Image (cartoon, rainbow, N blue to C red):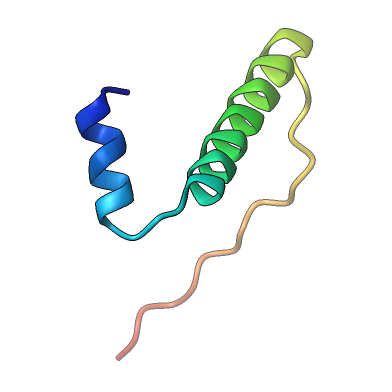
Length: 55
């Protein structure tokens, strides 16, 4: 992330604590994905059923 990127996020109205929260969530998701890939975690969420087409 460059200084220009950070300035753009601040320019969009985000405060420093909000930017930190965004980075924290991104790191949490990446870490969780890495751990699940290493552990080869089984996905136990049922598949969504398809919805009929309108008409």
